[in-house]
Image (spheres, rainbow, N blue to C red):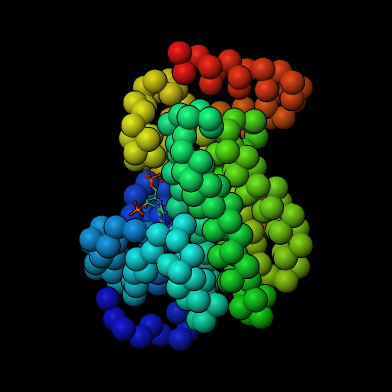
Length: 263
Ligand SMILES: NC(=O)c1ccc[n+]([C@@H]2O[C@H](COP(=O)([O-])OP(=O)(O)OC[C@H]3O[C@@H](n4cnc5c(N)ncnc54)[C@H](OP(=O)(O)O)[C@@H]3O)[C@@H](O)[C@H]2O)c1
């Protein structure tokens, strides 16, 4: 890790870069030769990832230790985005909640909504002016296919990411900035383990995606200027089916699923 990156080099900032999808974004962006700013809460893990990536890909890797749901800590990340060129921003950090809306502590619901919607909104707002000024930049926000269905605060926040990215991509593409929502289905990461839910209880094995091809597809879709990236044929088809089914049927099914799990 060096102190002062070369002014001509491109830099990517990835939130939630220590595990799962974010760690793979960091790896593939480093493989493309971009310097990195990695953001997450666990400092030891962040530093270990940074050292590994710096050594393997010969790029400059900085770390920003921040809980993005804490305003003062998030402000440091916003300041970094506004103060020096960032070519790629990946809004990825997120977590799920294991219980029904009425059973989760309300503060956890608010923190989740914050991390999945308010934080990407604020970080995108912070980075956009310099991207527009350079007429170049990419913002990828990790949404979810859950954003296509009415399923708790989580899916409402992910729906925000999809709708916002569709608008923002149409609006800012002429200014040279691509804004893409990545909307995967089930992905093998630490996400469900952190919720205390066994993966096998969530979905059959064939529905689970691996992070490597998922991130590769997302970066390819962003390179092509797409507003939404849905990795894998099976989830592309599923998204079409979900779009075609009347909303009252999707809602009825969502209710059954939640109540079944609660009993
Ligand atoms: N896995 C899936 O099935 C799936 C499907 C669709 C969408 N997604 C979305 O994909 C994104 C990444 O999830 P993942 O599956 O890769 O989960 P993961 O393996 O649990 O990784 C989550 C990352 O977010 C960081 N993080 C969590 N809370 C944070 C906070 N308050 N401030 C800063 N960083 C925080 C974690 O690091 P620290 O703990 O060190 O902070 C970690 O690096 C999320 O937005 C998730 O909603 C996941």
